[in-house]
Image 1 (spheres, rainbow, N blue to C red):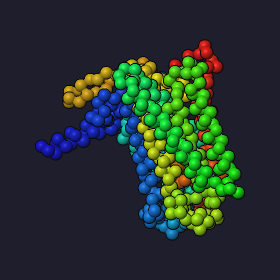
Image 2 (cartoon, one colour):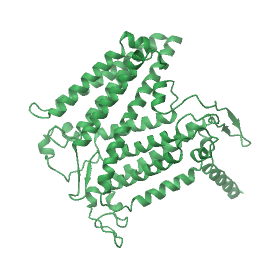
Image 3 (cartoon, rainbow, N blue to C red):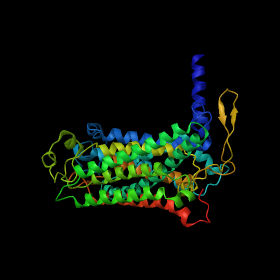
Length: 455
C-alpha cells in the first residue's frame, strides 16, 4: 500500500516537472502568479549553476577535475586531444568558464525562442512556463558538452564576451537598485502619511545617513590604501571623479524643480546609488595589475607590506577569493531575486527593463480536487514581462558570475597563469560613469520634457 502511495506521489511530481510553473511550486507559493513563479524557477537554474561554479573553483577541487578525460595536463586523456594546462593553477577557472558558457548558451536558446511572445496563448508560452524537467536535462547536456571544448582560443574569446556582458549587467544591476530605492521610498512615505509619520521618516533619514556614511568611509579608505603620494594616479582620478559625480546627483535629486516634476525622487535613492558607485570603484581598483596600488585584503588586515606579500610580477599567483568578489556575489543574488519578484510602478524603469507590470490579468486562486490551491494564468491578455529580455538578462548574469568568480582575471594558457588586466578596470569604471549618467537622466528628464508623462 505504501509503495502504491509512493508511486502515485512520484507520478504527481513528474507531472508537475513536465507541467506548468504554478503546478511545480503551488505547495510553496500558493498565491503566486504564473509569471512570478516562472521567473523564480529560471533564476533557480542560474543560482544552481552558480553554486556548481563556486564548488569547482574551491581549492582542492583540481584533484577531482583532473579525472575528467582530456581536461588538463596529468589527467586521463582522450585520443586526439592533448591539453597543456596546469591543473594546479588554472583548472578551477577553466571549469567556471565552461559552466558559465553552458548557462549562457542555455539562456540564449530561450532568448531566441521567446522573441515577440505577446501572451500566454502563444504556444511558445507553454515552453516558457513548463517542461522544467526537460529544461534541466538540456542544461545538463550543454554543460557536459562544454567541458570537452578544446582549449585553443576559447578562453581568450570568452573572456572578452564576459567583459562586454558584465559591463551590461552592471548597468542592469544599477537600474534594479534605482527601482528598489524608488519602491522603498514610495512605500515608507505612504506608510508615514497613513500612520506614525515620525517613525517612518526617522527610518528613511537613518538609512540615508547610513548609506552616505558608509560611502564616505569607503572614500577615506580608498585614499588611504589604494593610492600613493607619488604613484597610483589612475586611482586618485577614479576616486575623486566618482565622488564629485555622486555629490552632483545628490544635489540634483533635491532641487525644487526636480522635486516638483518627480516627487518620488530624493536622497535615499541617491545614497544607495552613491554607495553602489563606491563599490564599483573599489571593484575596479582591485583589478589593477600594479600590486603597489592594489594591496590584497590579507596584507591590509595583517598590516603586511604589499611588496613583501606579493611581488609586482607574479603571474602564477591566483587569489581564489577576495572581498570584492564576495560582495559582488551578494549584490548579484539580491538583484536576481528582486528581478524575479519585482512589481514596479516606476514607468521609466519598466521601459528600461522591458516589463509591463499590471498589464496582465489579475491571477485569482482555484482550489483543486486534491485540496491544493492552483494559480490561474495571469498572462492570457498580455505578458507582464518581456520573455526574451528576461532570458537576455540571465545570459548577462551568467557572464557576470563568470567574471566575478574569476576575479576578472584573464586566463593565459601559454604562461599557465591568471593575470589582472587594465581593460577590466576601465570596463568597471566606465560602467559606473554610464550608470550615474543614467540615474541623472531619470532625474532631469521629467524637468526637460514637461509634456511627457514619466509617472
